[in-house]
Amino acid sequence: MFLTLCSKSNLKYIIITVTIAIAAIILRKCNFTLKTDDDKLKRTNGPLVFSYDELAKYDGIYIDKLYLSVIGSIFDVTEGKKYYAKGSPYHYFVGKDGTRALVTGDFKDESSNKDHVLELSCDDVSTILHWRQTYREKYKFIGLLAGRYYDENGFETSYMSEFKHKIKLCKKEKEEAKNQDKLYPPCNISWSEEEGTRVWCTKTSGGIERGWVGVPRQLFTPGVEKPRCVCVNLEKNNSSMLKEYEGCPIKSTYCVFID
Image (cartoon, helix red, strand yellow):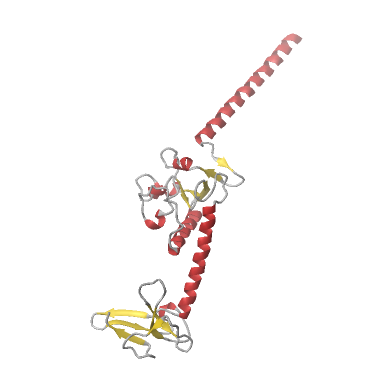
C-alpha cells in the first residue's frame, strides 16, 4: 500500500512538472511571436523607437492601427480613422513622417525630403509646431522615429539640434518684428476706383495702440522689393529708410495717390 501511495505521489509530481514545462515552452513561443509581430521594436529607457520600415506597417492594413510621425514623434491616430484610414483625406501621413506636407500640401511627396524642414519659413515652422501640439493634445504618443530627428537609441540627432536652433531664431525674428511694428505701425489702407489708394494713420492703425497718431511714410527694407506704408512719429524718428509720399503734405495724417 505504501508503494502504491508513493507511486501515485511520484506520478502526480511528474504530471505537475511536465505541465509546468509545457506551459513554459508555450509562453516562450508566445513571447517570440509577439516580438516577431512587433518586429522587435527597440525600447530605450524612454519611449519605443521605430525604424522607418516598422512604422510603415501601422497603416491600418498590415497592422490594424494607424500611426504617423511629426518631427520624429509618433502618434496613434486610429481614433481619427475617418481622416486617416485608406481612402481618407490625410491617409498620406500614415506610416511615415510627412511633416513637410503639413505646410506644402504635397500629399504625393514620397522623397527622402518629406520630413526635411530646415529651409522652410518661420511661419511654416510655426504651423508645424502647432500641428505637433495638436497631435499631442488629441492623440496618444507612441514613441520616436529613428532617422532624421532621433537616432536608433532615441537620442536627438544633429538635425534636431539645428531645427531647435531655427525655432529660437524664428522666435527672435518674431520678437523683432513686433518691436518694429511698435516703432513703425502699419497704416490703414483703402482703395477705390474713383479716389485711388488712400493711406492714413490713427492711434490704433495697424492694430498697434499708442499715444501718438503719426504720418504715413514708405518704409524701405533691405532685400524687400516694395516699400510698405507705416505711421511715423516725426518727433522720434527720421530714418533714411523712410520716404515721403509724393504730393502728400509733410505733416498730413493721410495721403491719397494713384497707383
